[in-house]
Image (cartoon, rainbow over all chains, first blue to last red):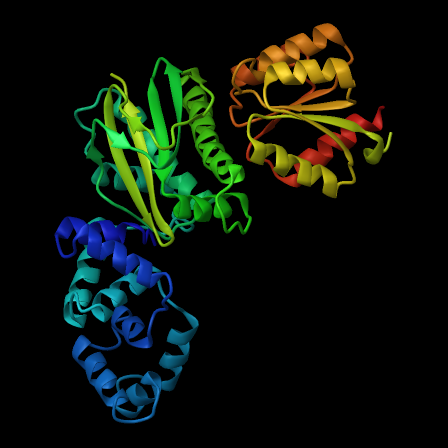
Length: 295
Length: 125
């Protein structure tokens, strides 16, 4: 499932603040889905039944599954099946909302239901028409209607989502896309596309996040900041933009030029044009994309 | 010629891209490397070091990869240059091949793409 949008869904619904969401995402990265959460997601137990079993666990030295079977909520084979299938990743996020006292199990069950029905999310690996679905998601997520060449901007964002999933991982939540004029950067690199369609994008994050991002991208296990880390950020941006240039050439016969990546770390970034901040809250930190579209 | 005897010039503005390519080539048995971080440096190093094979990026500051191919081929029409770039449009591939590059590998590459090209090019040396 397209789990990374569940956090954004929670933000849009106003059920969590960005600060709460970041805290929950961080906690979820070190957590696993509990059997009770899996039961509710599978529709095998109600929130009240799950609460009852959790309460009983404080009184008897038995596992959740054993009590649920004893109480007749589940069969032994259902427990076994649930244990084998850990369910979609966003369940950990949902579970963490309860653990941190932000909502109860009933609220979570309702939100999960709304999330699945309202946003019509799809499994990237299973859907044949995944590109169309991804485009729909990007359209729902980003309001770019007032931008010229909105189709190209949407294609760019679609590819960006694809590439972060492909090269970094899908354990992120996109925060809302917000316009800005000035931005003080930490570790950052930018690259410009010129020609019939003009766009400048930058990737920015703090040092610790950059080390984790770079390690994932390069398949290394770095634990401190180095020139390889900034090079990995530049390589990711260059690779993404390069693939966009290839796509535009192949699908729209549009030949774009790609400039060399530039280090814009620790700087006041003031690009001209419509500039948007797209933060992706990964479990290891927030990765910011700064995208400037020239009309 | 065997891989271990092949002097290879790797030109990419990214230190990470150079390292990744070098790691793949080292695993394949190559030992002799020279590195350049822009097109001008690649041209200068080619003239002074005469490598057997060149891996060249396209998008680089100062002199880009296409211009570097042109100038290296003007110096040595037998140069064996392999482009490795994320910008694999037909226009860029054609430009590189017209200037004399022998192969084009689209990033992100997998190790076998590199070693297969190496085998093909080194066999005839």
